[in-house]
Image (cartoon, rainbow, N blue to C red; front, side):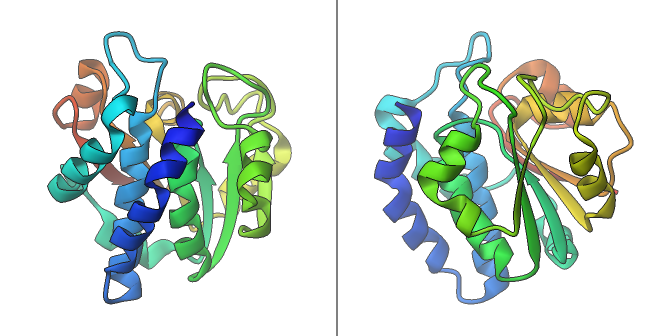
Length: 213
């Protein structure tokens, strides 16, 4: 359901991104669009996914923009990006950002190793043809919420070590990866609960592009 709802908004999101007059503007818009996609999260207690009115919500958030916005800094760090996705539906909008990032440097896409909640897996990668867009597709190794580095495949650890920037989507990736010394890393998310919002220094419901060096 999330994928189908996101596919309906995809052409409009593409046009919003393409209004950027420079590559830098398009990348910023694409990252914002992808972060709005993080609204597709059925695993947060007390949070209701706005799938019935997602088009209206998308443009409301697009107009509002990031509450924490480190995109100017991260745009200088895109030579070799590891991009860790989060949810189904959301990955549809990630596809725009992945194409923009691929125009700058190398991109490794990371999805869950097996189904858990509504997180994206290799099934969504194949369905969207993203394996033909990025340089490499890796998995977290299993059905984990976020990434547990102790259980992550060596190829994923190596890719993250070699990256000029890790981009981690969503709260689960923030909650796990912030426990490790993974740097530089940019957390892209909607802060959908007060605990995460306080932790990252923003308000509940805000869009975040937070760089940690």
